[in-house]
Image 1 (spheres, one colour):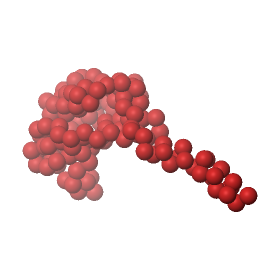
Image 2 (cartoon, rainbow, N blue to C red):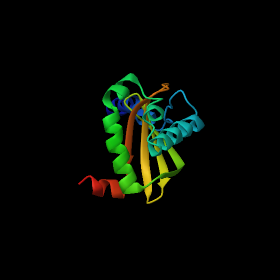
Image 3 (cartoon, rainbow, N blue to C red):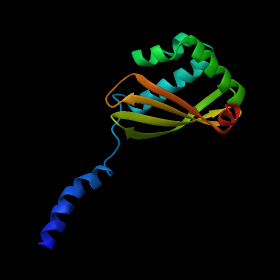
Length: 140
């Protein structure tokens, strides 16, 4: 009886354990397209081009990110990290139906981790986050 319980437990737990080993599901865009999204967005921010910055945003992101928020973010990034230089490394993970792309970017003053969030199989930016040592210090 104990052996049957172990086998049943293993059969139930195995799919859960193996699901953590599967590759992350991407958005409906290639890695190259994601890097182009990121570069265009970051260059638009440097150039103070709000229309270019929001080009690939979802309706929810457009509603949550008015031009005043863009100006605040732009000022923080420029003051803390400088100007965008290049997007370097891309890492994909998933979280609750979203493809989360973490992109290491070079700025004139420091490296910045930019996170773009798209729905799995989606084509629009659903979330955008910036993280760096200088930005964390500036926002305290």
